Length: 60
Image 1 (cartoon, helix red, strand yellow):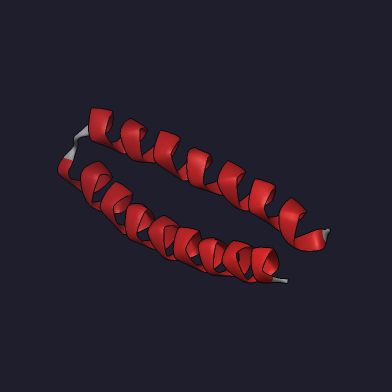
Image 2: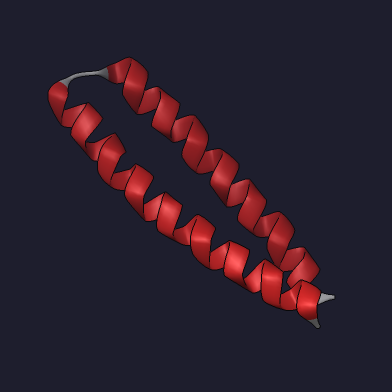
């Protein structure tokens, strides 16, 4: 039970990080900084993969 609660809170935290990184990614694209844009792209993928992993824990 406690493991599911931690996974749920972790998912919420990761989702907020995704929203924050999407805003930063948009700003990087608008300023023409493609390297920073790609960095945020990699970070977003990492966060999304982590959410998938946490959701598997949550489903157990």
